[in-house]
Image 1 (tube, one colour):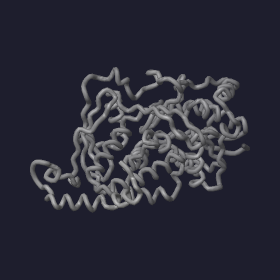
Image 2 (cartoon, helix red, strand yellow):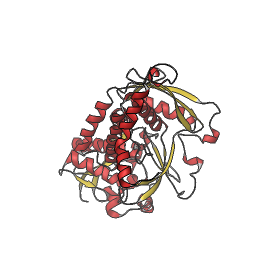
Image 3 (cartoon, rainbow, N blue to C red):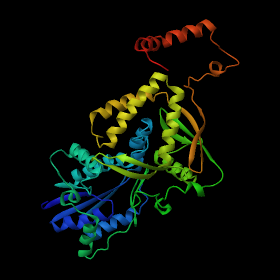
Image 4 (spheres, rainbow, N blue to C red):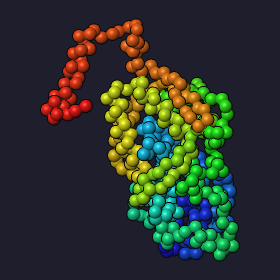
Length: 396
């Protein structure tokens, strides 16, 4: 680290606050950037804190709408649940934040960009890859926490040595939040997370005794309305987070395989994300042929893994999205959801493109295959398997 102008991705938390002081000590001019992706935080206060710590300029960028429409809703169309659980909240936000930081770096003629990622976290991959794509080799990336092996106690000491009080934004829990998910880290590896760790969801035991019913409308795979009322993308997500969270729905607790070679226990709150993906997947099943539905799952898995693993920059993502968008062309309709004390289920669905036919399904009325038709179908359908089983002496 040398002298020059550095643009810092600034969350307002402990580590990035300490980095302002640290970079200033190295003789650098620090410009801070906070990107609003829906974190429930006093962003005006974050900017004030940056100036007090020595930033020469601060930018707060409102990216909520862009995050919802161009990132979160892509995840809906791809039914994106990493390892069938995690809705990719942080993984989706990091490329957007990095891109906005890079834009400011270009605008102010920065020599460096900096972030507060550690050497054992996923976010270092997500930040570095996007910054390198946007900025090339013209601007050097600094990661002081990673490069100097800083720990939280070091960050506290750096701030206190200059007479600054360390921010206590989240108390005993480490929180990362945006519109799509709220992630919670704390000292509860082998126990249930305490109730005071949750903010978006009430305990299912304490949720109301009456189910919540709502209908989500989709156009070409994108959520556009709740109960018939069209809403801006970020407002729709916020509305679902509030309503479903009050019903105790939206908690995730799972063991996650990280990019950097180890497992971690991850706890999330994501009512809107989980509900929208569940509803979207149900509508797909009503519209797709069996071949389409099974192939789409392969696309979804590949897209989800790319995003989680910090490869938003990978060209394959664009190819996958072209196919995913094409397959969502007819995913238009509505899905009615019910949530009750932490559970959510589909009550009904409707689409003009649904291939469901009551006449075909009904066992008492409507079409019924003739006996010879059914017998011939079963014989031909099972022939490959039966011949192989006989040759191999397979038993039942």
